[in-house]
Structure formats: C-alpha cells, structure tokens
Figure 1 (cartoon, helix red, strand yellow):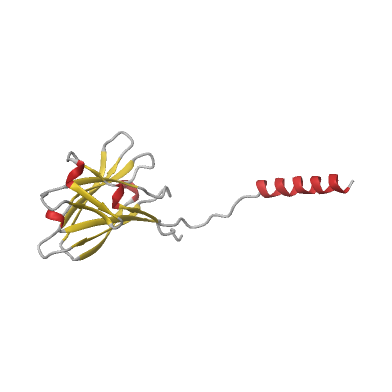
Figure 2: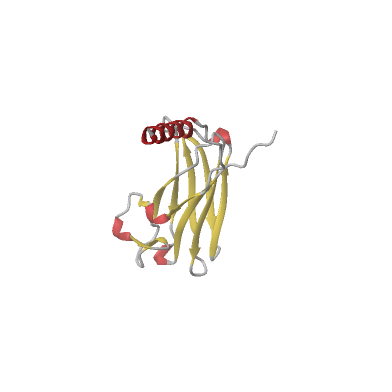
Length: 163
C-alpha cells in the first residue's frame, strides 16, 4: 500500500510541476566569436583564425567576411556590440550590419568604421528595422596584411518598456 501511495504522490507532484506556468525572466546576451564568420567571395586561405577571432593573412588586401548575427527574438529592436582590434597605426575595419526581411529585402543597413586600437562599437536597430522572421548579417572588410582582428559580436536584450 505504501509503494502505491508514494507512486501516486510522485505522479501528482509531476503533474503539478508540469502544469505550473514558468515566470518570465530577462533574456541573456548572446556572444559569438568571429571565427563563425565566412569568407565573402574570397578564398578561405586568405584568412586566419585563432581563439581570438578572424584576420587576413600577411599578403592579403581587402579580405571580406560575412557573419550570421544571432539575435534575441523579443519583438523589439536589436542591440549589438562589434568587437575587435587594429594592431598598427592606419589599420581600420569597415563593417555593415544588415537587417533582412523575410522575403530577402533589406530593412536597414548600419555602417561601422573604426581605426581605434581596440574597438567595441555599439549598434542599435529600431523595432521597425527588424523582422521577426528575417535575419541579420554583418559584412566586414578586415584590416589588410594581418594588421587587425575581428573578435566577435554580442547581442544584447532589449531593455523592458516601462509604461
């Protein structure tokens, strides 16, 4: 009789736990390393990868990569940090963050240019610039001759709207 009672209580507890509604929690940020980026119409051997990110090889000029950017589907806009380093004076990175609609039409394009030795550039898309069924890419022209590195992309959750 006790084994049957324990089994019955265990089943009841499982049903209560499964039926309870989880409370909402704020979304965490998403980080990806630029190692996930792929050459954009360029030979893969033009790029090097390390635990820190992606860079052009010593003899390469104008190496371009494309990165798929994860985002938090919260119904609002989207906030990002683009992170990397320029190792020598005169080195720079040029990127374009592109928000694509479901039917592959461009909703927004935001340009990023940095000559800073270490950059952590904040970019924000308004809700009208993000399609919940679309996607976002980052296209970057990396510094020439291994003079810099694209480290990664951080996606931040939208702040809550206070009414």
